[in-house]
Image 1 (cartoon, rainbow, N blue to C red):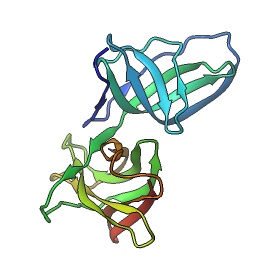
Image 2: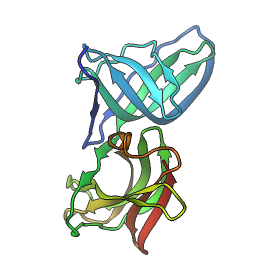
Image 3: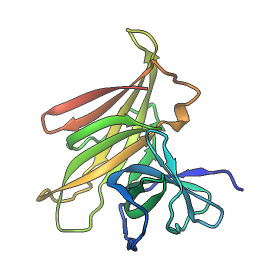
Image 4: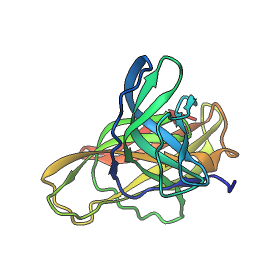
Length: 211
């Protein structure tokens, strides 16, 4: 099998799957951020939640990318026997931080709904202002480096880059945005921290998260 790679997505796309009747006893529907792991033929072989619980979907779901980890916001149906049906899913904008010495960064305002550490990611739910056009906003995360934390351990500083790109500001749209922490597996350890900087309408806000 080829090495698994993380798929970094730049668009949000809905892919819908119809759920058929099943005789298993239903446990619950849930919606969550998950990683979809595909095999060499592009079929989803397992669904991994941020708490590291993994499931093999009972339905066949094919993606276009083989041997890939794809980050999605998905509806899943859990059964009492531990099996799972993978339902509707939406690709989530996912990036790795860019290391740069430049001080210039565009940070057009966002509304922060939530920021949290989940699995191998900094997860963000954000509201942005948009218009009726198809103009796309530009997102990235800048790596500002690792420094000593006054309380012990190391502190990774990340800045969220957001360029409105000339889009109008008539409507509010909610998105999930994830920054992968996998590149820092050998640099950071339990007890370290991550500080995420996001500009809002009231100014620059910093969110401190445990690594």
